[in-house]
Amino acid sequence: MQEEAVGHGINITPLIVLLLASVITIPLFRRLGLGSVLGYLAAGLAIGPFGLSVFTDPQTVLSIAELGVVMFLFVIGLEMEPSRLWGLRRQILGLGLLQVVVCTLLTTAADMMLGYSLPVAFVFGAGFVLTSTAVVMQVLGERGELALPRGQKVVSILLLEDMAIVPLLAIVVALAPGQVEATASERLFSAAIAVGAVVALLLVGRYLLNPMFNILGRTGAREVMTAAALLVVLGAAWLMQQGGLSMAMGAFLAGVMLSESSFRHQLEADIEPFRGLLLGLFFLGVGMALDLGVVRENLGLIAVAVIGFMAVKAAGIYFVARLTGAGRDEAIERTALMAQGGEFAFVLFAAASSSGLIDATTSAVFTTTVILSMVLTPVINIVMDRLHGDAKEPGDEVERPKDLEGSALLIGFGRFGQMVSQSLLMRGIEVSIIDTDVEMISVAGRFGFKVWYGDGRRPEILEAAGAGRAQVVMICVEDADASRLIAEVMREVFPGVPVMARAYDRRATLALIEAGVVWEIRETLESAFAFGREGLLRLGVPVVEAEAVVAEVRRRDQMRLAEQIAEGVNAGNQFFRPPGPVPEPFSEPAVPAEEIADREAAERG
Image (cartoon, rainbow, N blue to C red; front, side, top):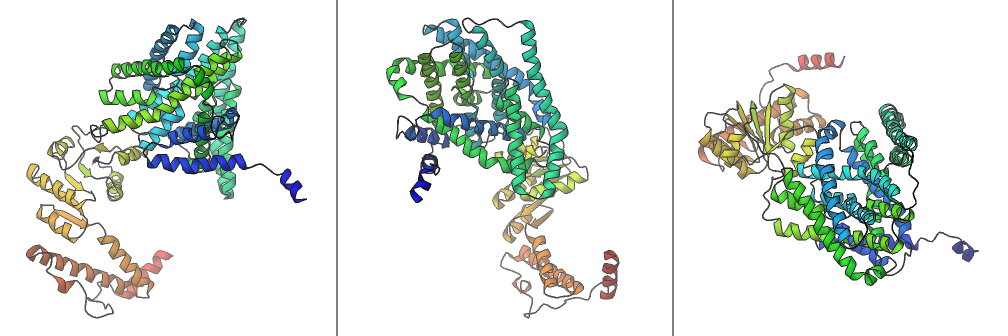
């Protein structure tokens, strides 16, 4: 019976091999600085048909793993509020379309130079132009550049390329030999189906998704919310596929429609494990699909194609980047990131092969060329990062301040500065904010805060940020030395502007006072007073007595600080520890205890 059960059991060996390959290679490649994408590709090659042969049909893995790309586009959509997407319309329809057109012309011409006919050359050229969304997004995500301006330009181009697969598939069908030309009515019918699918998705997103998640959220069942998130992603992808459009585009639109929902972060958290696993599986499948037999038989042609087409596409990307105003470093970075082919090329080549436009060998050569370009991309970007990492100035990708006019200038937008800004913004005061943390600036932008890149220790930055015109300058940085230097620069360059500062500790407080700030506070002082008061109450001390104790501690701290200002940091120790083990009320309360008790009872109703 046991042997029979084993015989009819599920063979989980391939799954174990997939997980084991990922667990071993990904940490190793990341530790070596080679990135996770290259690790997945190497693992796929190792366990595929030309490695250990654990898997003999990579297409089976790829067909499932494509859902990783679909879910990745959904997560990207969640980060793209409609207003933000509308703001990128010029980049999508302008920059993206220009790059696709220029690169398609160049790659098609290069393919014709290899001896292919115009239709075949167009198929390969257009397919190679469709950059790998999975590779590029993974690299941008690891760099933390997805939300930066230069990252947003790349995302815009990728979105246009994803949309371009639809007309390209139609062109492939039209170019196929023996193809009966569709009538005008048939074309209109196909277009109507596509438009109808988009409209249906928009209506569902507008009127059904949020009410559905509201109902499910009240149940409190986490697994139901996860199932609903998967249903939304896969349902949107299926609907777009039925309309003849890209599954990834459907998932992206679903994400955009839910980007302003209160369930956005919950959805992202629910999808993230599936997205990561399936996207990793996609790269494993790409590595498995690398046919070393085809490479060996057509080594010369493939080598020329990989190098030549990546170079030609790179030239087109660089030309378009510079033409549209990108700086040299940004153009080079975009070129290195997008010079490869992508996963949508496989879809285009499969359609061309099934329609008889290209034969099996040509399809294998084209597919292998794209796969090798995807394999080379992480390597190229690692080399570029190491060559240009030192030369790239921090903050190049974010906006710097210029002629700001805020009534208050807030320097440092960490956890302390964020809370400080709330009171000012709540009162309607115009606040200019600068910081040097590029990643934090990007995150703040997602939440609607405009933070400029700038180092407050530099006089020209303070001038551009409006320090000389501000009514108050608030130094909220965590670094004690940086805070002191900013205060000293303000005293020298803008002596008439009052400066407030956050102090790390007592020594930092003394340094800031010496630097001329008009008001300072140790970052943990008030929270410590509040914490101590609550501790006294929990220990049974009456409210009035607890408040009197805290008030006395505050008074003694101020007296100690005054002596330290006059005599140095080691002075005033007699005020540091109150006499006796048990705190006593050190002063008579201003309000009788009975009156406070009556007031609290009235407030409680």
